[in-house]
Amino acid sequence: MLSKQISVFIENREGRLGEVLSVLRENGVNILSLSLADTSDYGLLRIIVDKPEEGSKALKEKGFSAKVSDVLIVEINHEVGALSHLMEKLAKAGVNIEYMYGLSLHGETASVIIKTKDYQKVQEIMKK
Amino acid sequence: MIWNKEIECMERSELEALQLKNLQDVVTRAYNNLKYYRDKMDKVGVKPSDIKTLKDIEKLPFTTKSDLRDNYPFGTFAVPQSEIVRIHASSGTTGKPTVVGYTKFDIDMWSECVARCLTMAGLGKDDIIQVAYGYGLFTGGLGAHYGSELIGASTVPMSTGNTKKLVDLMIDFGATGIACTPSYLLHIAETLENEGLIDKIKLKASINGAEPWTENMRKMIEEKLHISAHDIYGLSEMMGPGVACDCIYHKGLHVCEDHFLPEIVDPETLKPLAEGETGELVFTTLTKEGIPLIRYRTRDLTSISYEKCECGRTSARISRFKGRSDDMLIIRGVNVFPSQIETALLQVKEVAPQYLIIVERQGNLDTLEVQVELSSGALFDEIREIERITKEVAKNIQQIIGLSVKVKLVEPNSIERSMGKAKRVLDKRKLS
Image (cartoon, rainbow over all chains, first blue to last red; front, side, top):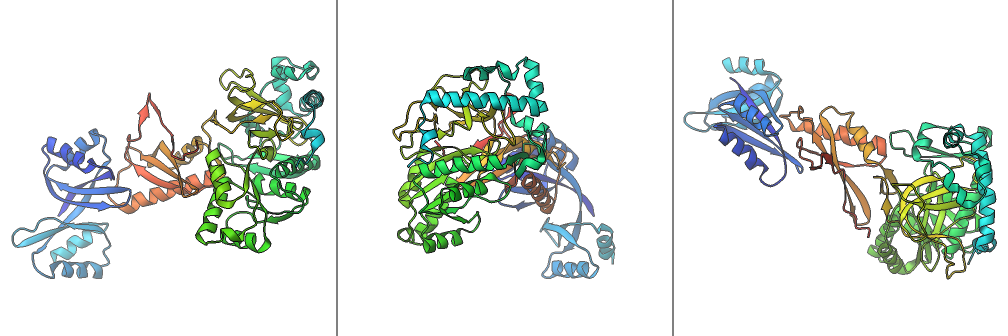
């Protein structure tokens, strides 16, 4: 399933991540999943939220560089080897993954968030 | 030791008579041969015949770096191009370099001035001098080289970039003199210290210039290497290194006043300042043929003294430089203007022309970091996009200023603005 992700460019300075989170809190935006990519100079926060449009609008108003992009949420069984199995299938189909992170680990299934240019391919693979 | 006692120790009245004769001559040459300067003089209604005393120089219009830029490449040459035997160029503020042309006379005059400076540092024909300025379009290498040959020293054209070889040859040849930037000499000193080779060298004196340094740094170099270190000043618009240098008493830099007439003016009002007052240094080339420059504003801030020096020289002395009247930075001997950084940023659409230049001295080498604001429309979800922009900005800046830089992207509107005007430069080098 396609979903909206917000990514925020964050300088490496104290309290900056907290400021992003407080903007979301003040606007009643709930975070479902997040990943934080870090380099020595800056970080890139990627979040899946319940209200992506409101969230990104609020962040931009506060001066943050916040981008909304499409990512794919892929549900897999919550068991050993499930992710490995998925990756094998995607590799075989020639799907290139830009980045990936986990969503939820409750119950019978888990989900991974995948950024790729080949959404349709992945969706077709998942239907099989 | 004094290279040209007749000139360097000349009675002031006699020197001033010589200066006046040459001032009248250069103003006439400039008026007759340089359209841009004739236009300037006509505009204020001054004719060469109005220059009757040295003080009359105050009637003449100033020249600035932009005159050189506006007349790029050869519009400032006062002689036919066939008379020009060498052309140097330094980085300009907006991409176009500043071009300087020399006649045979100019090269000989330049060599003479550098010869005086080397002699002030106690170097002569028995010495072996390594010239470790860059050779090429930059005036440092060839300028020091010709002066070193003129005094008869065994001149070793090291250029820059290979410290290991420089140190090896310094020891093997028993080099007694070196010409390079002060920060490079400190780097050489530390290399020698780390390798435990200080006792192996025979160095006795250095001339160092092309970047600002402090009295403390001079003393540190002297202590580490057990040498006499001298501050040599110059700018390519005048000719290059050798316009002034300090003698063994280190009480200001003796100006080669028979060739370069110094004035100190208030950088705001442009009114002349009295002896001892700090202001902008202005030079008039008295003898130069290739590109005569009248009342050229150097933007360097200093003061002047006409008191006779303990060394016997009567030439005017300028004090250690106190800064610049513009925003130019000198980094590793290279002139950098903040406006050049701005030009580079305007070529990359993902960043805003809002930046902070941070200069630091790590060890003895200057490092340059440029923090650049992302434009508010630049949005990312992939690190490699950010890396691509970082590299592109760094490459653009390097192409314009000729120095490698570290670029750090920062959030939109995060660079501090005071009174609506951003603070562009943070110079953390401790130079005073």
